[in-house]
Length: 572
Image (cartoon, rainbow, N blue to C red; front, top):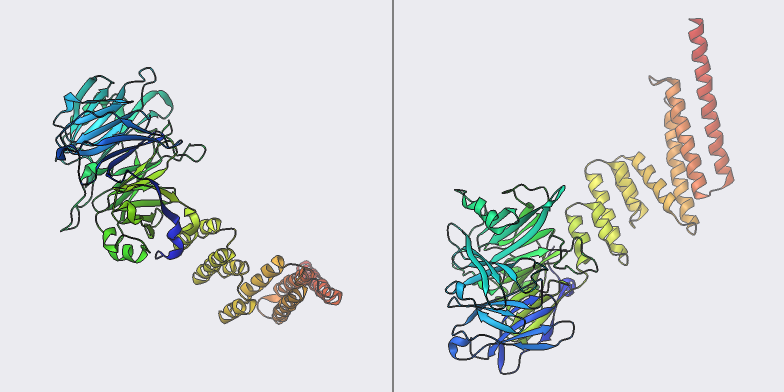
């Protein structure tokens, strides 16, 4: 189903925050209830150009801004990684390998990590007894994974846990604790590590050292791999933002996604060839097992589709093309961010539903971040942040399920205020049953549609399916409103005519190979159906009496035939 203008409102980009006229937004990240915004004077990329960057913490609930102290680093900021479990901690990676840790209102350079270009970070859930300590996994541009315990004034633990082979920059890291099924004291850990072309799973004990030690023993590390980017195209720097996102709605209350104890149910990975999606299941895995199932690749939309569905806006269609920069999962869609807009792809079919484009003041988009507590999304560019609103995203699900011939689900997804959707689903369901020769089922479905009786009747008559036509007429009568007495009478008359024709056919069988008893049975069935049709339509009493008389005659004929056969058996 091609994207159209009616789908454009599924995703909207609304201006939310703008830097001062003399500044540009360089990096953004989201913590629990806050946005971290790193700015620098316009025209300057950061400390390497002599212009010191500024870091603001914006409280989303109140709009309050706080400028945070930053340790001086003579290099350009390259990545911003906020703690999703708190509103107090953030890491700033720099191009020269220096990393600044900001906790509350103080900052320091991580001396033990000097020279390490951090490109991905996973924040572990904090220990309530050590409120000022943050344990993190650090992924580097060379594919190395480190563990660090960050305190306000020192790094109490720092060690290398693993190195990917072959080396590749990490562009996404996630760590999820879970408990073994049936053994609540058996705590385990799931780590997902992504590069532009591969992702790796690590499943095992809750101890990071023990977890990765079991994988260091392996001669070959299992992984999922995709092809590299198309020839002649460049992949974006991996430290612009995480290439992973998770669906955490399951188990959350109040509509928020949350960063609490509920594990994610699905993930998406922004790979070099498309969005790789998979479901997650935790609980029964042994060490080195996989937590991923039902995975599939959703290719990026062709550039022509992006240009055609982009609608009006300031950015040119060309700006929507390769490369995609970031992604986010919603309940029913994959949001893929390009420089010129946010494309919404259906999670069910992978189809492009719409593209939302930023206002001119924002400039080209650079990233997409999610506030973990409520699940709010923000796109950002040098000109500020944009709130990403997802509105009535279920509106097209009925059509996607219909195209997949999942008629029951399609019917359930139809909007109550759009009877035409329901009518189309029912009609296509009927056509499907008709095409496979299930004429009775087709008749029942056609009876629920708004198609004219004459049109459906001609279809069944042309197929020689008078029995299905009778079923169709009966179903129409059952559903008919009492106010349509005239139409009911006409349908009843038609049904009576069909059954009388059948009755004559049954009588004509007498003396044939089928015998008297079979003829009487057919006669009785026709008479019963005639009586029901007359009663349903509320037709004249005389017609009902005639039908009842035919029924009585059929029963008498059957009784007489049975008695004659009994006498014949006794005589024999």
